[in-house]
Length: 118
Image 1 (cartoon, helix red, strand yellow):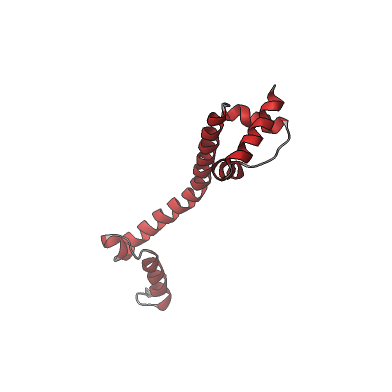
Image 2: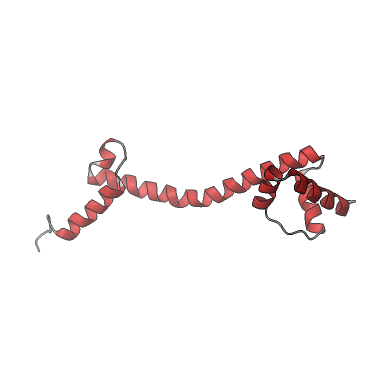
């Protein structure tokens, strides 16, 4: 059975990989075999890092909330515990924005959390 060397499907597949590798450095953007490996690696990193991004943002929000809590004289863990006891359901992203954009409202939340702790 003859090998397809210059078929359109083969050419399209290679073109697709090279188009994805556009902008890569050196051979990785020019030669099919190295571009194929580079694209596969890049896609695996992209998949992994879409998950990691969520973790990183949560860590950032917690760090911001913690800093704002320390300014109010309470620890992060006690603040979150107080919010749960007072049945205030607000996510960490919103709390972080509140701490940055509206410190007075954040102070009110801290006072409500603190009142439920004692």
